[in-house]
Length: 502
Image 1 (cartoon, rainbow, N blue to C red):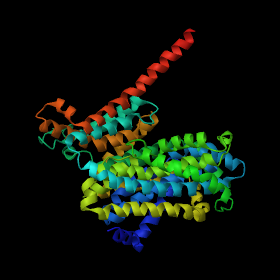
Image 2: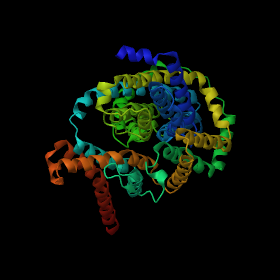
Image 3: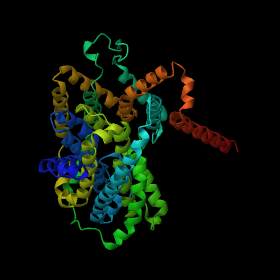
Image 4: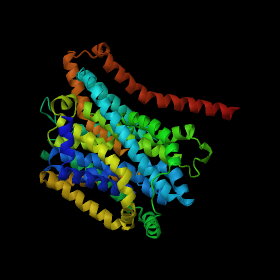
């Protein structure tokens, strides 16, 4: 089966989709204001008529390419293309100012590729080991898992936990709109027959990310013009492969941060940004040249880039084994599965492994290509940054609307996209979490279904949850995830008050 999956991925047309996906991901990930999430959201409707394997390979390749590409604009212009690259800019841009832009760019692409390969390998093995455990899950465990996932989404890496909780709650509310699957009663449809099936996920996500971020960037055109002018005057140095000294310096970071990033990626809601931050911190603590961090340390580029790309493989583990996305991009890839009638979970590994193995194989190949391809094409790719955003944004809006309409040929879906575009802009503008809202929409049905089935099993006696060790462990983790940050905040407040009094 593994050999057959390899032949499927190495099919010339599948390879074309893989390389195209990687390049699309690199372009979207490199441009500030866009991201791999936007690319996946916009292109999802166009995968409907494609072969399922090629659709999943395309999306996985976009995901891998986009997480790496944010480092390009971070190093060259101190303007990260995506959030994970914020930590890369801390030392990447000072390296560029010291005349080491080529070394920083090559270090980021090699570290991204190596971290991605190791992370995917660990994730592939881990997913296989996790499947037998997931077979023991029943409705109570799935309810508890969804609750834990939502709690982690709302708290991990959030600058404002209250706003993240509000975002999750809004996502859960949106997930309840439509006809109740048990009673058949319409909920929150407000008399609109078109809302009876519920909010269409793909048009909503296209609006939330593609339109929401585009509207936000339209309000910042002056800042965009400064970066566009910088990119026109930027002359890239010749890129050579890493020296033996750089490789020896990088190997410990590649090993440590690959494992770390993959494990963080498995946590719902953590994603590449948290992996990059923790990876940078670990590299700073254990690096050889700790005094150079923040001033242009090569290890400061290697560490976060290895960790954030390793997290991509980790995010696929809960998605494929339990249907719980580990990141926003993974949540969108989940929808590609559903569009093709596939439901991620343990049975996907046992009954339909022909859809699982190609994903991991394509991610391995994509990460290997990241080590080489950008070195040859980056001088041409960065020219995309010179395109005025008003034209680029208009094109994104047009493609987003066409994609939303083409999915079901319904004008109502276009209105959903427009409404969620406004909602996305307002959430970004006022600091609410679109990722938390998205995962609330994704996990809401699982949470409701698991709770109702559990209560039917227990004949309405919720105390029987205490007889399910796995469910109780997951629920306890969810409670701790929400409560612990407030406990820490209380202790910090008490400490600061005592200092003021003294």
